[in-house]
Length: 106
Image (cartoon, rainbow, N blue to C red; front, side, top):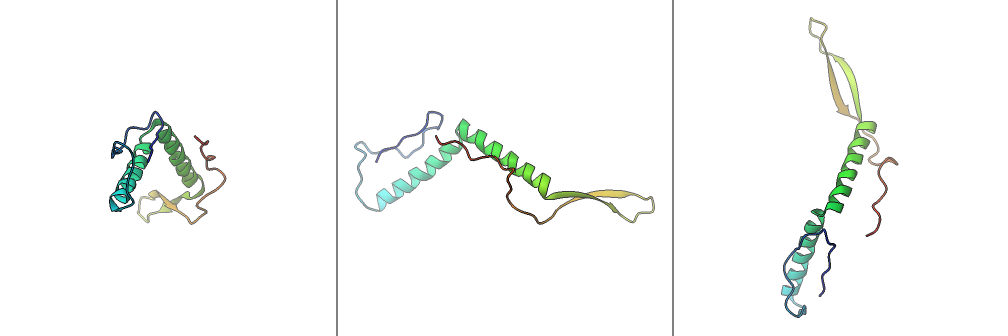
């Protein structure tokens, strides 16, 4: 087994054994599963990933605001002629061409 990571991805365990060799058994399965999960979590903490995730969340929020949210003035029926603005979502497409392009390969 060999493990590599980008410079801005923090270290993640568990540590490899001295020779990096395993027998095919439940201990290896558990090690590999733990290593992969920890690697994904560490990758989410890297600056590059956080910037891409933020950009994607902003695009999804903009998509929702532009295509799925509407405002309507509603008469509350009060004697003072008071109106209230409500916001609600309408069914619509989940995705559109306004989403950002996929990130470049590493």
